[in-house]
Length: 187
Figure 1 (cartoon, rainbow, N blue to C red):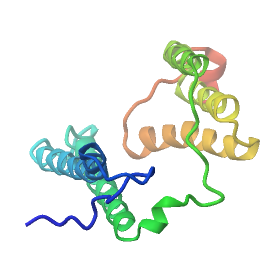
Figure 2: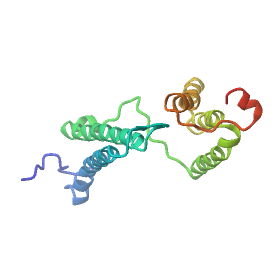
Figure 3: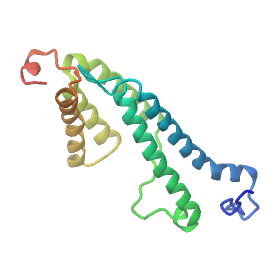
Figure 4: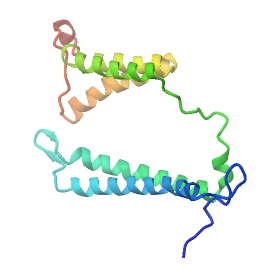
């Protein structure tokens, strides 16, 4: 017995719902369930890999936490989709302060790709902290058009904070600068 209460009865134009409309209305639920299943598989598969070893995080550390994250976020997504189907009025009107998804043009995509190549080229000579700081500032200020304070906080946490977390807490080495002046500063 199938439950047809959540299948759209009519399209936006007022005509009857087509098979494509019904399929698209179920698609987000299916994809959310797949995300949960993939996360559960990653979590289960990582259990046999070893969580921690003598040098720090073992081969199962990241797959385990990635699996947990996928399961949690997939369940949240699934819940939001179900809630939107139970209360259709909530999903039809976006909030006034909600931002629209930006449309990326070819120049924006090329700028992102070039900046990734520059980041990869700068990691060894300049080091992770300075390279990532400049990379994040570029993406937040120029491409994302965010405010200066917000961009600085995110860039500092994303560069220096991540470096500290990986090198000190997880004992995973990240590239340091090969330039003597920067290396002497601890960068």
